[in-house]
Image (cartoon, rainbow, N blue to C red; front, side, top):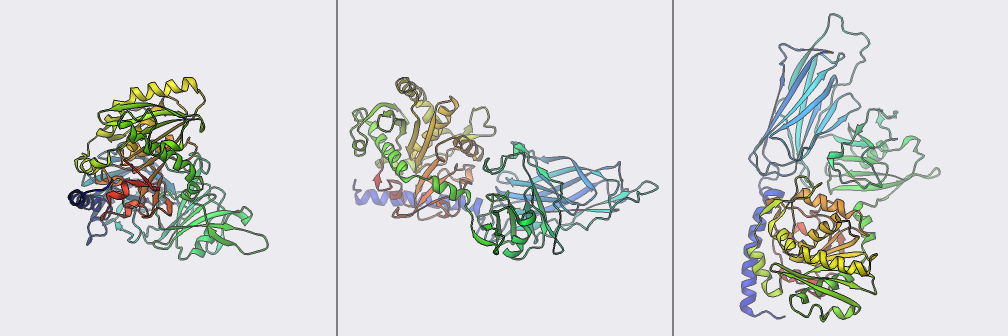
Length: 578
């Protein structure tokens, strides 16, 4: 379809306004301002009881309180508190409380110190947060106890933003008349935020003074509520890790520290971050707790007769690239494009530009005020297809300009804290009864048929809700591929969708064509978040990247905040959409 010159002017004007809004909103949550690369934070701490009275070692209890204040809208701040040797954690709390409740990651370090990590703290709506830790004072605690802390950004790559505590919290230990002579000396705690950390997997050991030392048995048990995005084939929640501050300066040092016991188990993996001098050790595929795209993951092949060799390791994204089947995706794309014919009666006649590629398809049209599509069965592929159309080509600019950013709670057991875009959810609810009716109709004839779900634009958002609905009813959903999908809900909802997608034939893919503006809507600044995995295509769609599992990979479409192009939304893999 050819646009008139007046229509093109209107499109560019509306798109320009939209881009300006996006750039202003996204900048607040990603980069703050051009002149303020790091957030402005104030961190203060106090301990009770104070140093004048002291705490009776072996019986005494104390409380550490740290307050973070900021006027900057930060959505992904991390906070670390380090307790000295002689303190053990009894209970932790935050005020205002974080919902859903996310306990800190508590790590016992080799030197006897204890580190507590609160990850992804959201300051977008509040300027103050208080962290409280109640501790026991051990009988062998040193007389002077120093609690330190610092905050840092989760997504910092070019700039590593660290804000230290203004002054540490101090406690003094009092002892019984006779302090036990059996107390072994402990190393002074090291809380230098410029030092790197290492995470050790079970069976690994650490390097101390140039000599390999036995692996320390004090390990961290991961809390199931932490919902870490780790491949279950690689690491179960019952496995344990260890984090230890080490003065690592080079990739070779990182390799030395990550050597396996005896060097007899191969291969093993480690990742090295040149920007922050951070080292991450792992026994299989590396998945850092604190994700940073600057990590350079390395695979180490150990041979008894040759020196270790370093090769790039398969990241989760690389594994998904191998699963990405362009032939299967193109087939599903045909059905997504065919759904636009369901805006008219031509749908059930199966008469459209891509319909001829799949002639043995029987369909039933579904239609509502805010959405159209079809449920069908193709006898050649042996699959049941549910496809949803987006906004028509003529109305896409008006739709983007009028899209609101309202959210509502998502009523689903097991999706705690989930919120979804009101309009997208309502659009599926209007179609839900028809979807269920025709899915059941075709399954009565083909009970073993797998279900494929797809959509473009608004239809892609509806397709996400359709997938959740059908899988909740235990239907055999096997493939979900979307094109030009907007953000459907908040981060909790994106995580929930990703967990459901683990049972699919291949990951839930959402294709993004270069500067397509729709995937940037609604903005992240309003609390919306994409589910993984994005497949990001270049401008002429000759190459692609399977992006990371964060859902918001800054190396993919999120790199564009300005100069978006609605034409990219209307063409996927050479197929005109709408």
